[in-house]
Length: 432
Ligand SMILES: [Zn+2]
Image (tube, rainbow, N blue to C red; front, side, top):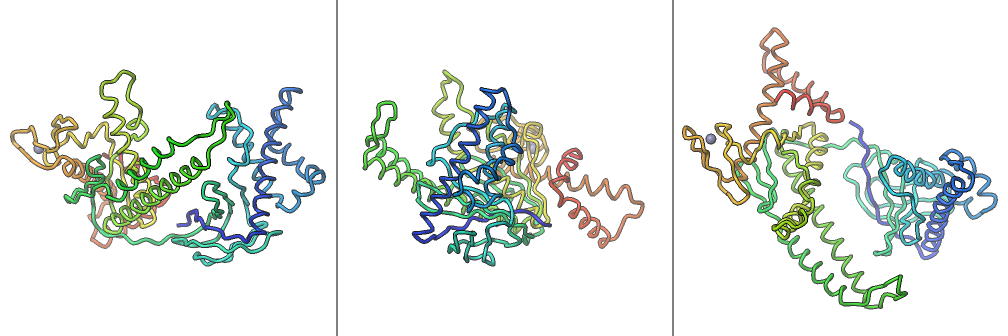
């Protein structure tokens, strides 16, 4: 299975190269703004809407007037015009506002959309990036799986004053998975609960990191911040505090990503069928209604949902299972109601957020379990039911009952068909 993955390397340009990179970034920024301006005025003055190809075709003439653009690579310039086009397309579809002019501070970099004008001299770990008309730049970083590089984006992060190369590669990732089946439940108290009773809490370092960010932003608030309308410049101390705060924030972000990757990789390495629940993170983290009495609680809940990165867990499990040839399924939360349902007898027991223990209301069952473990088990049982249903449907269509070998072959076939872009999941959920 060939997929496209993005790898980011840190660049270590020499002093002359830094000057050149900044110069090129400014040129790309100017081109972007010129393209926006051209579209705007052409429409306002002549009622003519400029499209991408018109701008692309005017590039050679543009380069004759501005010879400094000749070194940048024509496809990279086209990619910048594509960015303008993309912003306008978004606007025309009603998805975004009218494209703005960008200041150099907000302009992060440029893209090489194909193999021209750049070369990655690496086998996936460290190495050099060669840009034409600029030379070799040392780079550090490591890809999990390396392959054929396709595009390269040069990114400058002003708050760090560092340069990065974000390279997309076509690769075939290899990942191992176990034979287990597991259900997971995401919660606020314990970040992740597994159906075998294991609970994984929010890591301590995240809490500490967040506390530090809070202190740093308080220190920042006490310094003189810039104000454009009153023409007040930021104080030196404000700038310093700002740098400190953003450095801390970046660290927490990196730590969280690292933790999520380790957690999901561990789950995938042991289980080839993982059942989660469909979460509406956007709806769940919506602001509390105006005048709501529980505004503070809702804000706290939102924070804890976002802190753990619920949305990311599902996505990571999904792509990692697909790499390994396993499955990640999401149960329909609204219909299934995993928190209310009993994992043993499938009856519903209404609960509020406060009830931490599931006590089944069905007198014949009387199942007692931890609330989160129970709901993880409900997810697991639902996924097992799907698996049985889909296997049953297949064996019903064939006349022979089939030996284990045939069954395994069938399963393998199923896996292979499931390797497409998640085409298996919808049919599975219909069976449930
Ligand atoms: Zn029960």
